[in-house]
Length: 268
Length: 268
Image 1 (spheres, each protein chain N blue to C red):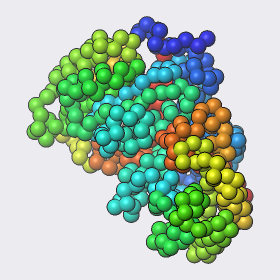
Image 2 (image 1 turned 120 degrees about the vertical axis):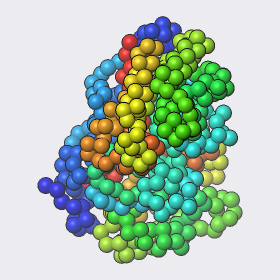
Image 3 (image 1 turned 30 degrees about the vertical axis):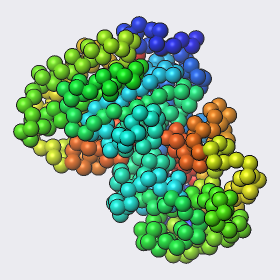
Image 4 (image 1 turned 90 degrees about the vertical axis):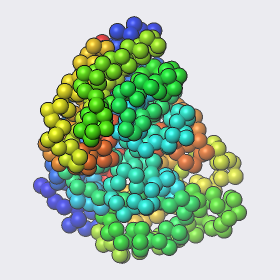
């Protein structure tokens, strides 16, 4: 029985709109606070699982391009957990949940994403922006620029170059940080804005390369594209990323939820 | 059996650390994604409740002082749902959850908090920063400066003035926006930083005044102080707000969770 709350008397605040995830459902506690990942194809929530990638006292590092950077204040980048050093994207939202819900774990979280970067540019700054931080967990989202900049004519990389560079980066990371836990995030796009037919089928090759890298290095893999493919079944792409590449607040929250789910349900 | 994940072989990612909310627990899906509000004394989650303050197509407005402002980009304040127009505080985090988990509801969310403001300063700009937006839901967090500025000698207000101004503001809001739903957030402090004995018992009087106002106007009340009082039982105050007033990322996330819970479980 969908009834607009606007037609109710101002003194009556009880809405009987049910719990279905429909356009007319009221925003109930269950739907707001436990729907994280509800529309993704990743593991179900709720059931006891054991597992989880991040341990107490861990240092967690988010790396990547502008989607990770999200306008962070670079002057504060040495300040772990600093509210202005995360930017306004999935890294901030995921870090917020980690820090709030595991306050006793004393986590240390950094964001060193930089707009416009491709894999080789991560490699160029890896000493300062990864190794020196001695992270226990390193999460990387990279790839969109590796293709976008070739479409723009600013770069002459290929899928092979992307994969080769990415493998080299992870080999080096594992060598220099024994015991490090890796999270490879799937590059994704929404079919709107700057993303047109010219991106395909090439873009799927980059996604597949990222997945091969994740498998080869036994990392956690965060299926962002799968998550967004599910999201657009109910809500148009521009709602999640206006230009097809940079997430809106809603898109960033969905990413954070998918990231948290992948990381917290990680098993051997 | 608490075992540091750092002692595990890098190829073994399964952690058997159980689910207790202890310092050695792994960050499991259940603890990360459903612990919202778990340490607060507000309504339990999970059970079907019906209810919920926000309806489809609603305009939601966050108002208040610096805790709400949180460094938002004021040049973008007319852009609803804009990721940079929310600042980096509880309003951003709550809006992210609303927009992501209720994408079909087509919500329109604004943040018009301004640093340093007291109740009378909200009133001075209420036409532009509330009425003109025609909000269906108005959430207000105000009060810290009403006392802080008197302690600093910059203001000569009292609890009575605070309450009188607040009642007048809500009367006007209800009159000019028939059917509007109001959310009064409890002013709070953490006992550290700038917050010392001089704030008490006076500060509790402001909290009580906010609660009286909420009751008088039949608004939702978000018990932020109660929530933080619970949080500091396990983690020191500075973790939640370094100066006692402005929340860290962890503190802002706890606030967002409490806000979402209060709003989504609102009943007549």
